[in-house]
Image (tube, rainbow, N blue to C red):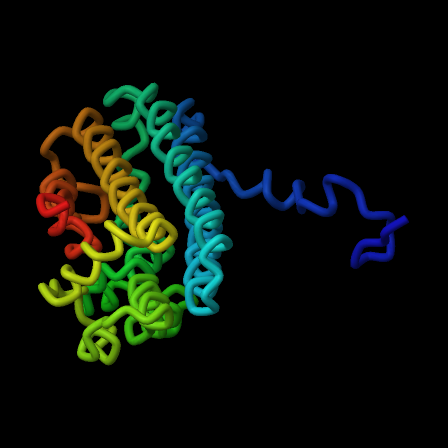
Length: 267
């Protein structure tokens, strides 16, 4: 029989820390308002998924660095499945009416999803890096420290480029040695390499397609999140003084991996 940290037999509840987990939902409204519990639970679940998806992106990156394409592909499948679940959770949140949300919205004060360090970490890992975003997360917080480390760290796309180079493809040297804190640039030279891969290398082209799936999956989540916010608060400013819908619209249709999209009309 396995013993927990307390020396007592390990149980389902003690292993998952259920007592602590289920004590984390603390509505602030009077009553409290019925839908505030839903709002808290959904967003805590999102943060748990962000934690897992960041864990999986790191695994996919390490697998590409080690030339383990099959492991990377399996990990991409898991990441894409998590994204689908995240999108489906919007359906649950949309059962909350605008009137229900407004009944406790003022209690959120300056709190905003814009402040999610883990989601920003996800973007940084994929290559969507904006140095200005780091300032919203103090350097002395765990999330702020992680973001500052990720800003100068290679993205999963950089690991993908090294994966291709390791397989003998002529990836431009300037891409392999680029400034990782900057957005992923387009490269006509790399596009020629990718076209050759799509036509002649099934395994590597499959890796390319999973990256496109990942890019598209993130866009799908952004769109559903945007429409959920729009139907809940309309064009009003977001919580915490953020721009709300206007900001979310600006994040749409920004490809993570531009070269993988640019070659579509040449295949």
